[in-house]
Amino acid sequence: MPQSTQDTIGIVGAGAFGVALAAMLGRAGRNTLLWSQRQDVVDKINGEHRCSSFPDVELPATIRASTDVEEFADTARFLVVAVSSETVRERLRVLGTAVTGRHLAVHAIGAFGPQGDMRVSRIISQETPILRTGVIAGPSMAKDLMAGSGTSLVCASEFDEVTREARRLLEVPSIMRLYTGRDVIGAELASALSGAYTIAIGLADGLGVGIGTRAVLITRAAREMSKLGSAMGASSETFFGLAGLGNLLVRSSVQGEHRSPSYSLGLDLVSGNGMGSHGEGSRAARAGLRMASAVGLRVPVLATIVRILDGEIEAAAAAELVKTVAESE
Image (cartoon, rainbow, N blue to C red; front, side):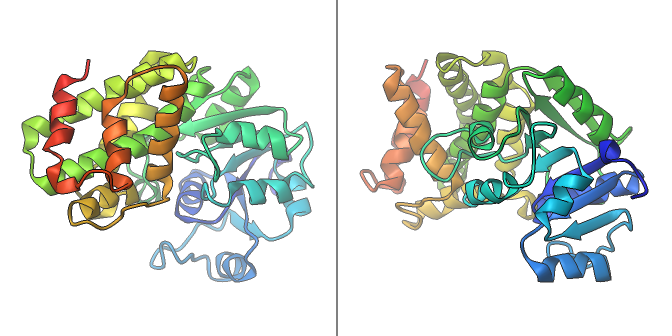
């Protein structure tokens, strides 16, 4: 191995974000090892230095990929979990057979787990023996990482070693700025809930409510999720930072290359499509509403999103959404 285990970044998953992060790090001279369970993906990365997410981009030679979970665990001590929220538990279950308590892990999954409202850091603790965990979150898109555009993330962990190693290994001068903190609950909730509120922004844009009302909706959404986060034990400030408001602004971008599935769902709801959706944003909306109900908190924006998703009110009548926003505290 050209570099030690301490200096190799292991990335769980070979999707767009994981590969883009590896490419950014590779151009900075960092060694990365991607773990994928798909042999065709691994062969393409190792043989052609290409991936399906960015077919026209040649990947740095410092990127390797493997299907061997034992090799992956032996090669890298610092791990970044970057798989879909729907598959994260099963992937971690396999990873848990190879990793030990010496590993450090952060996840980059801006959603709750596949069932209910469980935070991904808790799933890592349930499915693996890894003791020191954290989360990275913020408005960094895969295309920006691949292009080397300047971007920032926040890493939150209760363990100083995790944030210290994350900054040492992931921060790239002039390209990636990594802020650190301890509010794991806040960073995870803000990242997941911003996906739910993005549905409302897409819905508002689809209805053509106007830029002023859109701005009001964004600020009300940030305030509402900060109140919910505070009720769940998080710092309200986290929701106005990169993981919360930053995520919401990027996810609700009207630019095609940045358009998120949650934003597209909001647009679809205007035409009557997307009812009963079970994507990340809709799951987060329902999870957030359950959390709020459990602590007796009024969350009118989330409640309206869920009512539209469940077909209780028609999206075309979502002047009600604007009304609830105006009346929310």
